[in-house]
Image 1 (tube, rainbow, N blue to C red):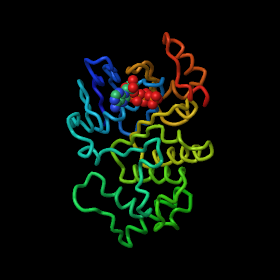
Image 2: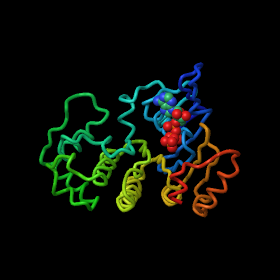
Image 3: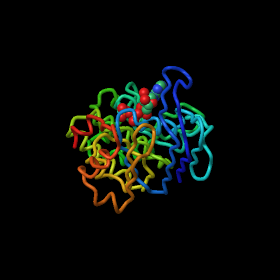
Length: 264
Ligand SMILES: Nc1ncnc2c1ncn2[C@@H]1O[C@H](COP(=O)(O)OP(=O)(O)OP(=O)(O)O)[C@@H](O)[C@H]1O
């Protein structure tokens, strides 16, 4: 499904500001895999997601989706394959458009023609049905401007928009981190439901180790641009937060993201 083969990415190469963000990273996801990604600050987690989405190109190595090498495709050309939710609730939705217009735009993702925000009655019914599953009452507010929603509601909508076209890969980049604990819990539960419903192949970056263990069937830990630990399904099921901390402690000089410690 997703094959990342030996990719590296360096920012400002050859200058005093040189930063090696990814070093020879390889990772393979089978259809339906849900991999959680944890790591230290600056470990390369967001860069990994950015190279998969095509926001950033790789220096060396290849990224393939369904056997097709997409390494040289720009992000807009990969959009049909990929759904993404960012940390910032403002990033995934258009505030001046209504809920139904946002959903109509999401349906057009990866298709080139037309503005695509017109909404037919059949579409409206489909949207209402999808929103009903979020259990936030948004199905009754289809014409409300998205800018009026709370952060948690916007993140839930972003999640729906990123997933309801059943992308080949769903990328979640600390998408609950900016929410208060209650809303974060709600969006975590929705994530689990949305991913399970369509068995979406998913990569989720989180600083919350408990969440990283609770969601998904595999886990990877990154440090200084490398994957330093991988837990497959069975091992992950039996792991605890202290186990993860112990894995980190094996890396000399590695300190976990402070927020991860707070959340553990
Ligand atoms: N656009 C960029 N330009 C220059 N350097 C960058 C850029 N994006 C990331 N970096 C650098 O690459 C390294 C990896 O950053 P990245 O954001 O991928 O880490 P991260 O694991 O997501 O970190 P965090 O948990 O702190 O968000 C860091 O040293 C960072 O400063």
